[in-house]
Length: 406
Image 1 (cartoon, rainbow, N blue to C red):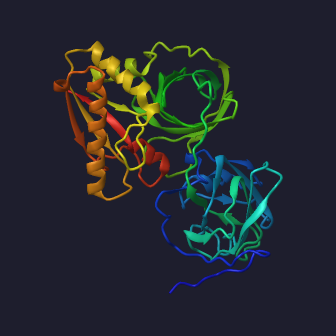
Image 2 (image 1 turned 90 degrees about the vertical axis):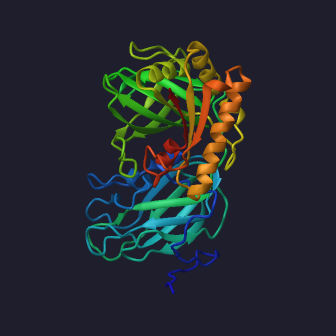
Image 3 (image 1 turned 180 degrees about the vertical axis):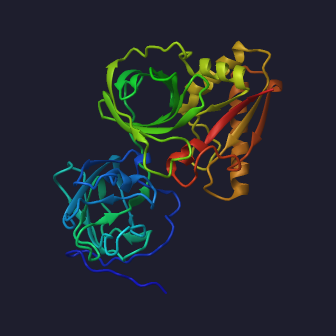
């Protein structure tokens, strides 16, 4: 029997912490990997940044400067308007007794980062516990989420918090009417990206940089590769401004997805012309052909399916047509189309679903004129992950199609 620590928020309902999993179909909307970023930040102790609250890890956290233990206010902006149904807090990994956050207030707004806030949660956190979950006392649409840490557990020098999550259904994020193709000035020199449907390919002028991935609304999730042999790699997530003229983001080394980002990656649009790099072919089909020629295997992102379904979504057509172009350019190639999923769901369900999705891709290619004798399919479910399934960014990398030559 668990203990419930709760009290009323003005006229709102009483809430109770409960370590229960998120309902099916819900995601942590307050995550860097969903395109949420801090827009109002209290002061932080060195090496304990606010962004650590959004990295999905209970082992990295925020801490105040010494002595600023009360009244710390944060505001986070989500990628799109959504309703958060449940909040979670991590407070186990504090490094001083009594430093964990205690009394917290959460408010939401659809107006701006400074106005129009409605209180949706007031709660008292227990010391030394992660995944302290509280249902929202009001379920109202939000774009900005304001968290106030009123007090800590008694430490006179420090207040710390290691995770802040908000669960709800992922909203449909409106895309940019003109797409994102173009050249951007970024922290890692010029960044050239071409959008083909939901698929992204490109390069950047730093250490033979290559990128590929997909865009969901205004949220760009890519894999970057550096070095002449592409041996340095990892994920990145960026969110575009509503006018598409700038993005803000973070990057990780492969295997570090469940930790603090390794760095920021921000950019401002210079031109709608994509530009080029000597080490980049310039298109999805070009990169597929180059990768399959050199390694015999290529990952394809941007092929999207309806939820828990093998039905290909219409916005996937451009990237599938790029696969057709590669196969047409190399008429002797025979390919195996592999379907891969994340770890959500049972192993057997994922295996069947991944096989069905691979079969759907084959059916599209055959309908486009590719000889079916050149194509085989295989479904591997979640058995061959390429990233950490404990984070949404890792799961998004694991949901993929791979093409294997031979």
